Image (cartoon, rainbow, N blue to C red; front, side, top):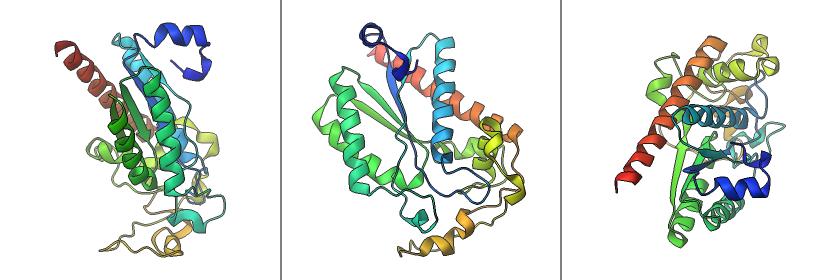
Length: 243
């Protein structure tokens, strides 16, 4: 169920039976010349909604919270349209969101992350809140934690690459400009932090070849990832009943 669609009396009734809250977190940033700036939010929101539907079929209730749109995206801040939030600001903001859900009585909070630059701030926010409240916080980086499942569908992964492009083709095809899709995989042996490193590592805002992307691959990715997350939440719920 969607948090923003509930009235407060409805929320009061359902929160006692809800097993988890899923909070999508993303960023507004360049994703090549072919994908929309909101890619890193569109994907986790879609996955969260699919997890919700799958769990309903299994008799498990969750709440899907509104997404955190802005993220920490230092490297891609060299491109127009990227809205970079400092790591400290993101950490503080997400920690406050987690605290509020903890105060409302929820004990399993799932941060469903769609952007790599958010990882460290989200870990720190989660650790801070877990020290204060009796909560269990899950941090899921959907493209990373389910890399094995995704690579059964796609030949490669990368920023604005085959996997991300496929996902957006499946959920927001009208926003994808495949005629502009191009790129290559670039890596370095060590992490280099420099203000303009994004031009080198992400030419045109891409780090992979997106040309083999398809809506069919996107549907397969979304199906596999959402099913795995749903399975993990059901398993956690069953373990909780047994303890």
